[in-house]
Length: 232
Figure 1: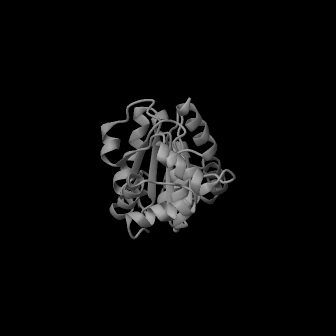
Figure 2: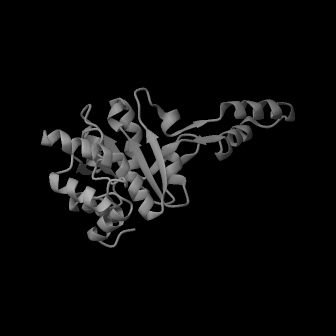
């Protein structure tokens, strides 16, 4: 997707995201190594916008999993369409169909409801997968991510292992509300995004003008407010 680090910076600038060499370098490495990026930093510093901008410059489809307390496998990965399965069982009940054949039928792709994680690795087109605010989920729920983040595959007991058709660019964002597990961190490249420096604020306003929205980790409106705050 990317030829070099400067190419990443230039492409992001074209979509109004001002990235430094650190941000551009990690994005470049993630593409070359096929590894996810864990983006940590305070709220409002442009972590989510980075994934959106990368999707825009690469022409990739953005698939977003918004994390929250209580998120489980059925909302993040997949679940079976139980109503449709029950309807099929009732329809075939009078046909003396062997249960083994019926079981193979109702536990097939036709009855599988894909959620964001499974959708991202089964997509045919290029994908950017955004796992937003991963620090909001419980530690146990992180285990759902490990197989995908390390091998880009999903194991479904009834179907076996589903391997990715293409390797998505994966961004996990965290506001540091809790410490993430070491197992999750080991699978990712790390990027810390903080509030911009004064010279970046000047670049933002100088390039974008007041009427355009630029991102230096912050939208321009927040950037101007931040600059006023630190000048006081």
